[in-house]
Amino acid sequence: MSSVDGLVSGLDTTSIITSLLQVDAAPQTALKKKVTTEQSEVTAYQGINTKMAALKTAAEALQKSTAWTPTSATSSSTAVTATTSTSSVPGSLTFDVTSLASARSIVSNATYSSLTATSPTTGTPPSFPVDVVKGGKYVGTVSPTSGSLTDVVSAINSAKDLGITAVAIRTGPDEYRLQIASSTTGSDGDFSLVPTQAGRAKGDPVSDGEVNGFTQLKAATNATLDLGGGIFASSSTNTFSDLMPGVTLTATAVASGVTVGVSKDANAIASSVKAMVDAANDALSAITTQSKAGTVTATGSLTGGGVLAGDFAVRQLRDKILSSFSTGVDGKSLSTAGIQLNSDGTVKFDQDVFLKNLATDPDGVKALVAPTSVFGSTGTGISERLQAVGKGATDSVSGSLTAMIAGRNSDIKDLTQRISDWDTRLADKKARYQKYYSAMEVALGKLQSQSSSMQSQLASLG
Image (cartoon, rainbow, N blue to C red; front, side, top):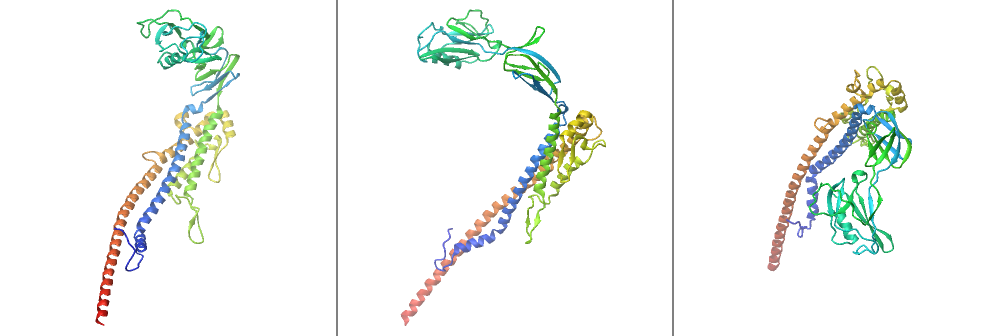
């Protein structure tokens, strides 16, 4: 029912109904405010949860034995790069790079005036179709629709499993040639083109000589390292994997007397410990920001407080992190590992102290940081403690933060439904108000009509 302002009464019924509905909607407004508050809390919990998950991950990394045996590689020449893995062991190797891997490429002797010309300008063109042979075995046939460079290139590049690619190259004004190359480097990618023969099946051995009409630009070769004493290492690419255990070498140029060395990388261990301490400080900062109490102004309002001000569970999480750092291991202080608590509630990591003590007492430092299962300490290393705190907060089933987020989301769902119910209730009230005021206007209109009629009758009597 539409609302029409009082034509008889002169009342602004639209404004009256709006005001009445605002009063009626007070409970729904309170529910909406509650939803906004709980959504802010969910965001705050999720932010802390992300930081705690990062802390858990950083702590878990230090619980693996491989985290304490990292290595780094150096190369005496820019012609060779070396990378290590978790299986690398210290050592060195000297060698010469005698050749790099290359792909075979050939070019047509015949030249063409354009890409679409079917007859060459100079030279004798290769005869198509041709069979492609790799490793002495037939792999497929190239059958272009015409002798033009465009069709030959298309036939080669659209065929599957031939292991070759083609391109038309411009070698001069109105002069084009066909170039064909193996798709991969090394002797395994070598190919030849032989006269086609009906009845060949893929994999059949072929010993035919190559077709005429091409000049070889580059042969297919492997990359080769001369290790000395008549010993060579070969690769179809320029990469050599596990020539040294867990080490990958990549050659980029021919070079002599290249030495690659692999050594333990104490700085990498320190970086992992620093990452854990940084993650702990990030988590502490997020908790402090979201749970700070704030201050009461002169008017009695609260300002500067966090979204989770006074949240006991979150503050308890902060205490657990700090207590993990405040307790030593096997009677030894964490300061031996360069870790100590600051007076402002943050954690400091001194990398120089860590590296110094790691060099002089590696087992002692490892026992402070790594778990019992790795180095056999009788206490619980700091990484194991922090991992447990992180898991207790973020576990998808039993995590404290997980439970709080789920609880708030459940509340939001319930509140949203109640708000929706209020929408229906308020719509019904609006309809009743409109009906009431419309009826009032009709009644007033009838009274006004009756009054006019009586006045007319009285006037006629006079």
